[in-house]
Length: 442
Image 1 (cartoon, rainbow, N blue to C red):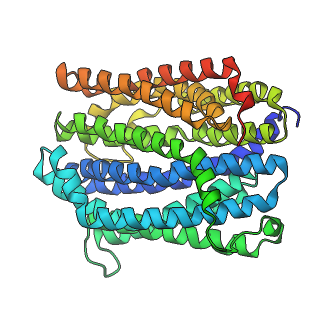
Image 2 (image 1 turned 45 degrees about the horizontal axis):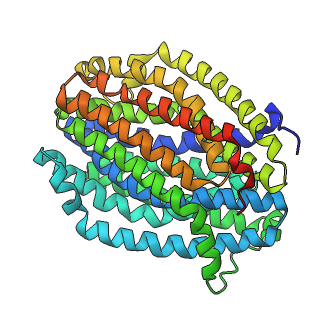
């Protein structure tokens, strides 16, 4: 395999990018509609949503490891092994996510209570969490399909499934939050139910289109043979560290928001808006993360480790160029972007300084995300976890110092993203330069 052209990178990346846009519409819609309900609901959806997302990272981390394995087998042209990996991964995800759903539905509020200082935010967060968790199994199964399609570099269905999810969520948010078309007014509970149902619809699309596509027969999916514990064990050998890494990473962002919650409901509302905008503007970088780990793993599967660094550097340049365009456009419309989420003029003005802080952080993200996913693509997920742990220690220490100890303004708290991006990027680059990853066998 020669170093992929910019056209090849783009052909793989753009469907992923569109799928991430559609997925983020779910987050944007929830935040925008709840911003019209009240600041308590706006802040509470951030807390409940972050705890849900932290648990969701179990599936996301596992399927990221599955994607790396599928890409490696795809490079080796071992298509039958891909089907076995897929089916056994489904068994593991099903059992794990159903168990998590049960525990959170019945005991979730008990997890939140010790961290909350506002009773109103606690009640709303708990309501959001116990209904949102009902979509976890379906969301995780959808991630498994995403990892399969990304791993074989056949990504065109990702944008369609996410568009279905986004469309269903927008309609149901409108109906359930505000009580239109004869439905009762559900508020934050309606937002959670709408998101869960939208994930069911996206999964049904994946199952139907995968079943009908003759091109995919060579992978022998859906055989649902007896679980192979050896395959599950070997998959966890790669995925386990990624799962732990993502859960800890999102758990740290949950702690980040707990620090902010102690600053007051206004700071929490500002940060929920900023979180949503940050994730939305990250989309080009997130898409290229998947491309990086997939192409690196495919190259290693083909026995061409010398192509890895050229692939990473080409994608890195591509990522920075896309982010320059994204940030340049976003910088001209701060209040219009924030107004998507709220019509409170004082809240909009309070959010503007933090908005410009994250625009600067996006350039660091464009570089560090590609380098870090290059590390993941080499399948040395244990080292990737080590990088994440070191970075998060300093990230949370800095956040605590600014938010709790010094009690500075909310925009200064968000400069913690510069600490995170700088450290994880430097440690990833150092690892890739060492070259020990070339001998990693999976």
